[in-house]
Length: 175
Image 1 (cartoon, rainbow, N blue to C red):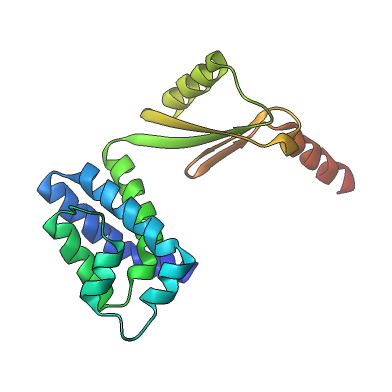
Image 2: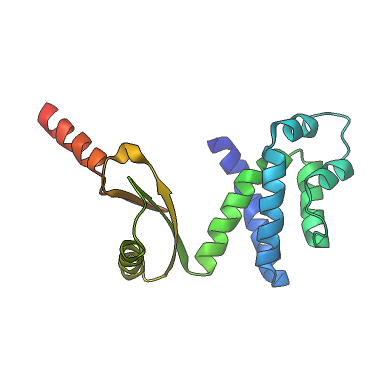
């Protein structure tokens, strides 16, 4: 996994530079996300690894209909270098670069049950204050947390779950 991230990083940076230069990061984002989903499919993965698959056929397989010519050239470069399998990592890094450029923090709030809109708004306001940036919040439910929530905002993880508190208490009592 870390090797894939290392290999994907220069491609993601190049894709982002091309997208910004063309003034079309949204289109690139959509095209890369589609190609990443296609390339992650197990059947497609086996085809991409086939030695008789031409670069053109590989690009046709993973490209979104009506993709920009520069996106298709980028996918062709990946195909020529047998790197189409890196598309999920490239797409993820592209999104990180785009969020950073747009000064947006993406946060995932996982709670034991659905949070009321007022609580989500309060969490979002606190994150905006903490990071000094716009915040996009994604929610998830994990009943194993028992209560509370875990907020994952890139490099910052705030574990306010009952499960996390119990684990910390158990560690403190054991040590």
